[in-house]
Image (cartoon, rainbow, N blue to C red; front, side):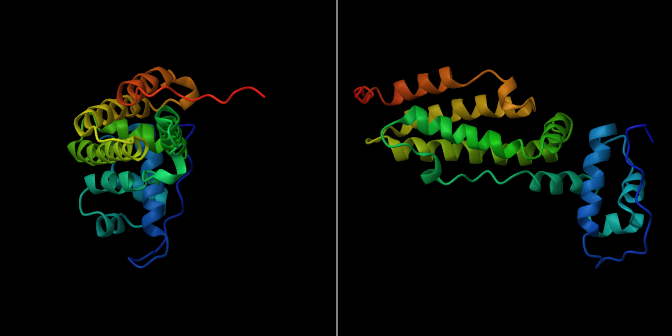
Length: 206
């Protein structure tokens, strides 16, 4: 055990129906995978830190990789309702609102976010799950654009949504806080002007 490790919870006789046993296993897995890496962490150590019998881990998670899948499911919900971010007739502001909300949600679990993007380099099960989450971001960007634009530009919208999603995903994969990343105002402004060249109306000073 390293100096910064939490002491393991006392082992219990918890059975398969124990309240919270599965969550304790996942809590321990996050701490230990972040500390030592997935491959270097045996399930026996996870059981020790979770305070459960080793067999209970295999009851909930048939394969060790299933722990990673369950951790992906712990990432914050990505579905942002359009009405929460769309600013009428202002595509750039709408996209900035969406990106800011996605950033805010991922910052609710920075250790888990960093861990999963790191493990994705060597585990296909994580890459597949993150690809599905990436596609959700693409779809949300597309919906926001379609909600603002007054006309159909299907092909351009698909391309723009994919490009912006890749930029957002790169920022998330580095696991740096939003304030430490390069702002996306330039990229968002470029996409907004390309898709919606209508001049912005600015209120006259009183």
